[in-house]
Image 1 (cartoon, rainbow, N blue to C red):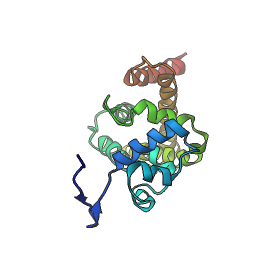
Image 2: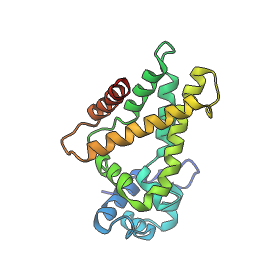
Image 3: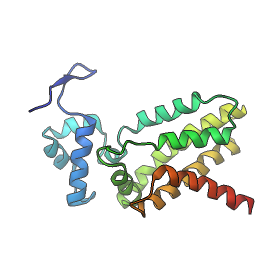
Image 4: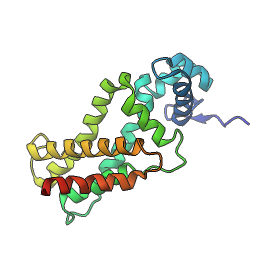
Length: 198
């Protein structure tokens, strides 16, 4: 049974969704590899024209990141809603954990998405911009709490440290199919503390 056609915010009929495009793309990535998959092929898999896919995602490189701007907005909101009496580093750590909490039934699976993002050479240059935006959320928050500029040393350091922690945790998680992401993220933070204290 076909899904109902919904009206988009711009008034034109909505013939697909972000989720449908991502699921189709990941099927093709698994079959053909990322480099071997074109936007034309993704559009054909979804059953729409290429121009429709481009309305949802500006490039093929954006598809594995999903609706990243929305998740960043939620990340920022979590930090803004954190009580001011919680230490800055603890507030950031809690927000990073919340940012990386995904339902087990996510489609495409979160493990599959992150493996593609972290191991696909063609995505690395594009990912630099996404990582910078992610770090910027942390830098802005730390600067606001400290009463300084986001470009000052502490906010910048906080952004880079937490990105390194998260990527390290993901690499460990991806190497072990039985590992729990939240547990690995917590262990990564604790290990940093142990390293700094030794």
